[in-house]
Image 1 (cartoon, rainbow, N blue to C red):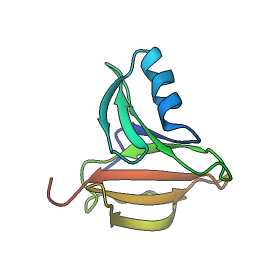
Image 2 (image 1 turned 45 degrees about the vertical axis):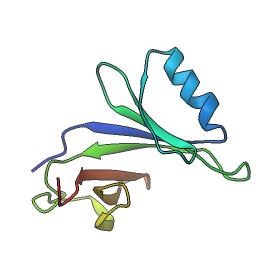
Image 3 (image 1 turned 90 degrees about the horizontal axis):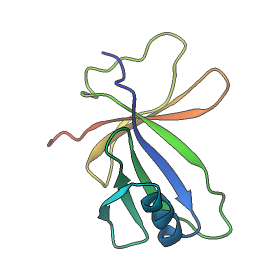
Image 4 (image 1 turned 30 degrees about the vertical axis):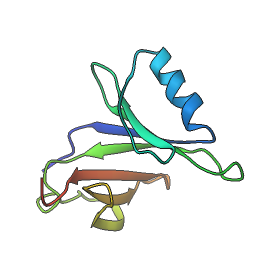
Length: 115
């Protein structure tokens, strides 16, 4: 089994509201607001954008999240370092972290076991 492409762009920000409005001004629609300064937006085509507010003293990285249909069936190929195997998340998916040859971390996300 291989990845299916980019599922989500995960963005940390210092202002959930301003960043959400920025993406809405670009045509994204709010799918859900978590109620604690984060939420997900989606355009008609392409990956969703998940935005999470972090304290002002933290950086604001951006991470691409790759999609797979079945965490149990996914086997990374040679040259892929698994940093952390699939784990259940508090938001209902399963998430793995891998490292590419240049040291960048990538998230690989699959549906939760109950989906």
